[in-house]
Amino acid sequence: MLASFGRTALVKAADVRHCSIRGRRLKVLCGDRIRFLPQGGSGIIVDLLPRSSQIERLDSRGRSEPMAANVTLLAVVLAPEPRPDWFVIDRFLAAAAIKDLPALLVVNKADRGIGDLLAPLEGYAQAKVPRLVVSARDPASLQPLRDALRNGNTLMVGQSGVGKSSLINALLPDADAQTAALTRDEEGRHTTTTARLYELDAQSSLTDAPGVRDFAPPAHIRRAAERGFAEIHALAAGCRFNDCRHFAEPGCAVRAAVAAGAMDPRRYESYRRLSRLYESFQDT
Ligand code: GDP
Ligand code: ZN
Image (cartoon, rainbow, N blue to C red; front, side):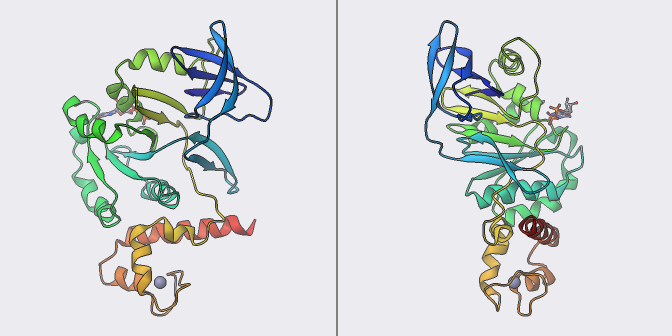
């Protein structure tokens, strides 16, 4: 399923068609594999096949809302301009790690120079998050990204202005046609959908979720924040208390590593902020 417009959805079969959704209970997400009954040039979605994964986003109260299905990789796009909000990036990466979803950092606008970003990016090497440096304006730079996207459905997120649309346009074989179809509902009206799926080839796709600032794991997961930071999770084995939250406990190996310069203090600060955020959700 390519895009959802409420009670209708854009479906890719042998062709691309708008279908209605049978019943009120059936909730179809971008990326879902569905069964439908063809009816002339359209059809009725009657069933969903099981999902291999489901991505939710969190609203301001910590409630989750399903957004996309069958995502296999998270690509977090950033650029020298606009300046990265590292906490937002850490939240995306943490949400992926907690869901055991592989993630990739895509540093775009390399043509503008990324020297300023190299120091903050060091922390992600420690967290073992792979990184690709690309420019949407330089086709040759995109080949490693194409390779990384092959045979999967990648969810692309990032702050507005980092170049997500430009990258999609540069990567898609028939960008104009796909973009036109995906932003119009059955009546041809322009719509802003929560997510849409673009086909790179028969086995590979990109899901764009415009306006998504956050997607997140269910807040009830125990020690979610720690699981979102691989390097902290690894260090935590050395803490004196096995329920250490790495805030002010004695014998904390995480804080010791930060003090010794062996752990990125900025990533640690993100961990603290995310911990407090998840705790605030649990209180409500
Ligand atoms: P989005 O909001 O993430 O979809 O970002 P856009 O794709 O709309 O890009 C925002 C601005 O950055 C536009 O003016 C693009 O032309 C520009 N841009 C995107 N990619 C690159 C790039 O690789 N290099 C440079 N110099 N500019 C880029
Ligand atoms: Zn600790």
